[in-house]
Image (cartoon, rainbow, N blue to C red; front, top):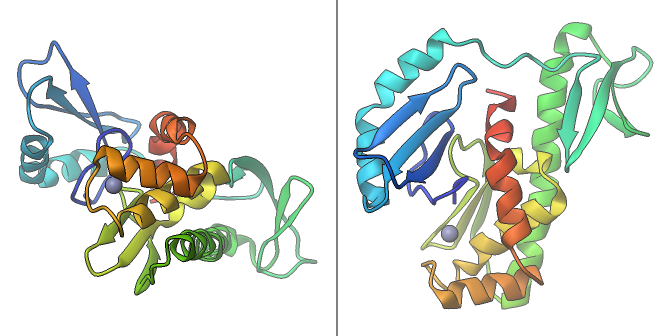
Amino acid sequence: MAAVEELAVDFPFAVSVRRNAFARRIRLNVHPTRRVQLILPKRVKLQSGINFLQEKIEWVSEILAQYPKPEKFKPGRTVLLQGRDYLICHSRDVSPRPVVRSGHLYVGGSWDLVHHSVVTYLKQRARTVLCEYVDEYSETIGKHVDRITIRDMQSRWGSCSGKKRITLNWRLIMAPSYVARYVAAHEVAHMLEMNHSPRFWRVTEDLYGGDCTPAKEWLKANGQRLMQTVL
Ligand SMILES: [Zn+2]
């Protein structure tokens, strides 16, 4: 699933899809903030937009290469972890492996490695937390997941293959847990329903334990920020 409409393909950059009733043809906007927006006229199929985007991958990548990349994590900057901002502090007294303590993320080791340590920490937390959610939901429906992959996906939050393999975007660890839980429930629900039918949404909401709308809206509003935090 992607930020707004679901993209069935993963692109090498973050893309949000928007419908515009006034658009007369498919359009692509590449913003200096590195935001890539695919604009679809009202009645154009999403697949046509995906095909259009696939033809333009190189063009978009060339434009993006000219724009500044996001700043690296460093002491004094904040890092978003499960919906909360933590101030990064460097201290030679703590281990290189970051530690969360009262609103701060303490990172030890060499100053030059702070960015790397923070990214590694986020990915490890993502693996632990997201796998827990998937295990919990798959147990609830009594299905075995063959493989859970936590990796970087530039334009999607997760996917579920017919072979019972679930992939989740590590960036979800930055979102509040109710949002990451929703994506996990969504992908596990696909093990029962490989579509987005009303039945699928009933299964998802049953698993999730309530209305998914707030989580979906959070992703719509903040998803692009998560996709662009670290490249
Ligand atoms: Zn889906």
